[in-house]
View 1 (cartoon, one colour):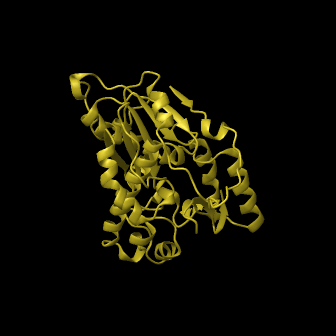
View 2: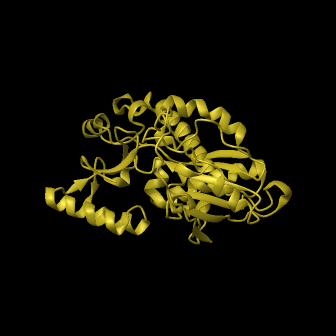
View 3: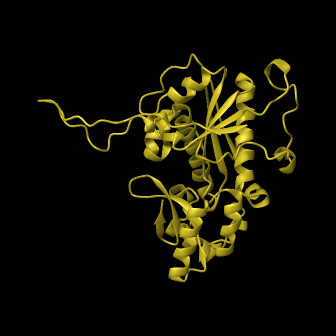
Length: 318
């Protein structure tokens, strides 16, 4: 079962106040830290454990796609100071938060799906597989999660009716392996746009996933130094794209993505998988037609402010 959580914060009317005498004006860029307001509201409905979930690496050209999970309950306290969506933090800030986040959460995990699994099953199925692996890890620590709070508007976690563990050729945890000997059950999923900005559990999941995946790509860079993965983390930075042109893809690249570009006809498949929506597909198609682009790379890349955007051959679109 999937539903979208309304954003109560955005719906609340906002008022602008002038600073009083002697009071400094708050910078316009000040962002409220994520809270447990949404998680506590969901726990109040009867859930025992709520897991924030977020992914990283969906748009990379190499390396795994990774999904972080941070579990909270009614006794969980305010999140560690400095927590924010991983994209808004420096690498050093993210890494410094990890020990505190691990102590703060009831349970935590990061699941991965390899580039080979992405090639075999598609990015959405790979996300689901990574998410299920992360849930299997936290199940060992705290039992079944009742509800997953998922960033975005698309539920890529809920099974469409196939056993992804079987499809990936790996053994799924057997019924009765969960603490207490009970059979596994699929959690309810609630989606929320910008949950990584507003919900502490989702922000924590994003940081945990980002730090772990970045570490993997940094270690892999030593084996493939030409691609500079320690700097670009597998995304389509100029040095990475040039190395692809010179050396071709490695076994860690997502070969089904027609590297170094994604063929224009593949956009329809991305639409079917839920990676693109109709509005963005129209925008990409129009841009490609206007510039004569026949092949393009569609990835998430950080801009100067640290936010991630979709890039089409150098053209930025939110």
